[in-house]
Length: 306
Image (cartoon, rainbow, N blue to C red; front, side, top):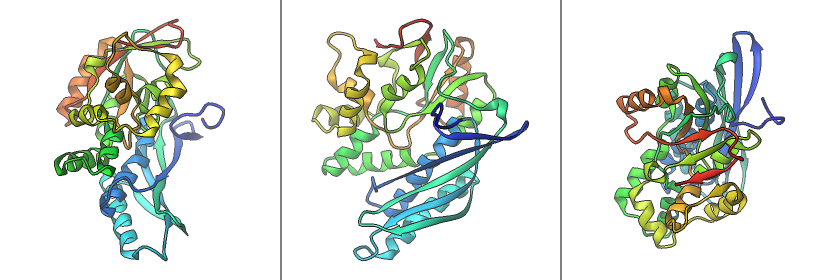
């Protein structure tokens, strides 16, 4: 899997029993604390391995650093945060590369293992599948509020912890179920990533917006107009695939397109297993996991929000 059929990561089969998953991700700081930035960037990079059904094994740092204008101690803290998150995930840091840059950037390339028969892709949806989301939406809006000096210390701490939380536990729970498709929700927002799951398949999905987990403060900040440009770009790119009900609050529309950083997994599983899977996610410390929609065959590749 690679450029011919883009997914969350590339997959290369080594043997009948082993395939490598490879991914890379890096970005500019989204929080002020360099240690937490490192942890969030690492959790975000690892997420694609989990979304593909794999176990991350090794990682390499990617750094762009303004050496002439920023204290090197900041970079040390970023790398420390990234390393601590890798240790939490059981991943070995094996190297990396840095360049002097006018803008600070950090992330990682990650390699994971998966059995070739257990690879999860975006486009394995089956008619009648239920869609389960494991983390609440609204991170991009909260980050915009942080930049605007509006967010409270409490919500900053809460969202920072949310972004730094690995999708590891959710991925482990999935191994006991017959999951048909999976992706992680990041920069394209919930609806953007859903669109990737149905594009070219003929399937459509329906969403019960009332069941979608949303960070409470994100509604408030979005109502104040604190919506990132990425949400508007996501909507413009995919709005032809989405049917919104008349009168839907524009705040909810913006949240559904809100770009996430280190967001949750979106999982497609049979209707018969959905309740049990959700229950197991709750029991394993993922209390906001929820069934938010279902898959319909021959539905014209539309996302119907209700």
